[in-house]
Image (cartoon, one colour):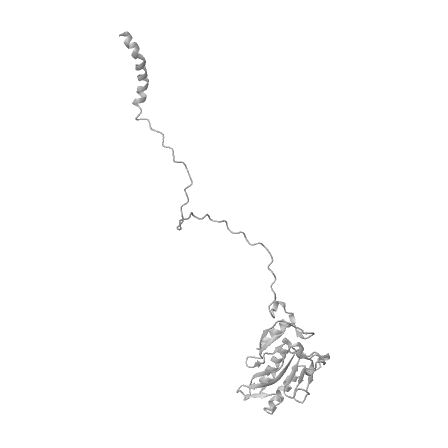
Length: 254
């Protein structure tokens, strides 16, 4: 008996040690499970089936450079001398309409730096012939319209003025060897006639409305530096008006 007990004594001792642990195995709480590893989700495909586009950074601001200079437009006010701008302002106030044109340069010394194409002299008087003139001459024509044409008898209102020649690079009286005409600088016009509001045409130098023609010619002499017409050589069928500058503002009225 003593021998058997001796053989089982180690087993009993082991069970004595393990017994309590086995008894409390169901009551000891287990540690919480480890959380799943934190990973970046896979990019979801967009509606077209391709991976979602990665947003791009904002574009870089444009380089701070000076813009290329732009050429001046014909008659651009910023490129005009002060005197020319003031003249055009007065022309508008007189009711005239015009189109600025590019500078006329040559041939030779012919030309004009700031020419205009005149369309009307006022709100009631138009111009035919598309005359190309300086602003100074255009202003004189518009003033003549206000002070001269507008004083025509009420039953003979003037509706239009016919311009024969305006800018033309040539000598006086079409003489190639003569001094350049004011036409060569867009500073002279030839008036061929005018039309009344009722449609009647009055050619300059004709026997139609002689009193009216004389009144208009006299009104022109108060405005233009040069007035030449019937009775003056080479001007039997038109009036020549120009703004030629002479010493002491001398004027010619023939």
